[in-house]
Picture 1 (cartoon, rainbow, N blue to C red):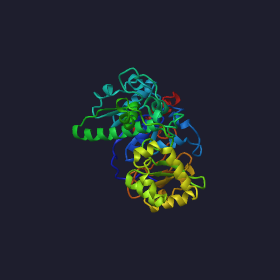
Picture 2 (cartoon, helix red, strand yellow):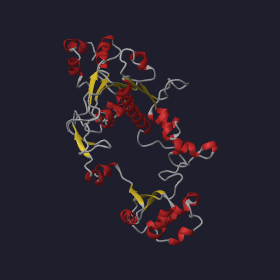
Picture 3 (tube, rainbow, N blue to C red):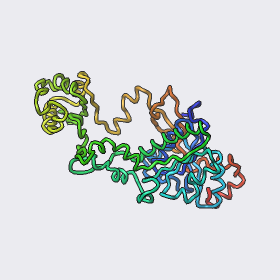
Picture 4 (cartoon, rainbow, N blue to C red):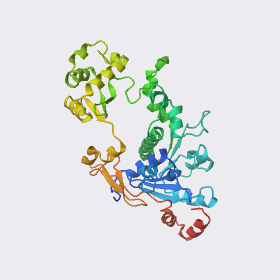
Length: 396
């Protein structure tokens, strides 16, 4: 699919010194909305996420996810000649995003304080593990480490063992807060004419997401216990086996739903008055007994039959889907959520970003090969005559 027109961020140029997930996710969302994103990559190597795996017809799954609609420019920023090229790009840029190693951008002269006198309209977004100041400033940070340091593991898993999230939640949180912070800075610049720094620390974003368990454990109270796939403090809200061995996820949020569940699904109206299950606090305290009772009632039915009964009673439920199920999910197909994007290995399926779709355009341009746009960008900036020499020296 080619680029959509008349998107909100058309005319905005973003330069990104990015790798892995957090910064690339933020800039891909900017590209989705029409921004031009120039991804600066190390010659010959590129974003190290390119080499995470080869699951998508030889391309890396993480890279395919967060790098469509970008231009790849190879540039070795450690070489002096690269600085002229970078300065020429920054002169045209609205936003600079970086998630390099702690302190690396500042050492390259790419901090907001160093750049703003020359480029007063430039917005600089710095994404790091722990932010500026404090004993952890120089500490390396990866997704799992922030999940651990931020307490996420303490409330996720089984009673016996902490378990990480199956996706990169700390990276995703940082990327999304960077995205929203940049959008806010662009709105602010439209009023003031000046750029500003947007600082996003992964630990801050993880702590924002951890605020419920923090408050739940206020003043030394017991934190939510690890409860597998079930909710730690609301019950019944979690997985239950049906008679065919498949799992049904169901959730009750209030006493009205509990009464309906007893009457129409379990067909055990007497349970409404059982003191063990009379309210959520009691049900949570007696969750083992209630779990066994529900599974015993479901044992005579298939998962699909249980879901049909739950749907008829207007009780919230879900399948426990696999990745194979998601590729064929009927709701995604019915709503036209799939499109295709081009790539170095040919067209690939891609989901429209949330809030967009066939009738709400997004930019869905190719996933770039390493350095695919280097020569075009050099020519645009007036370096065409030097291109061969720059390639020979490994500058680009």
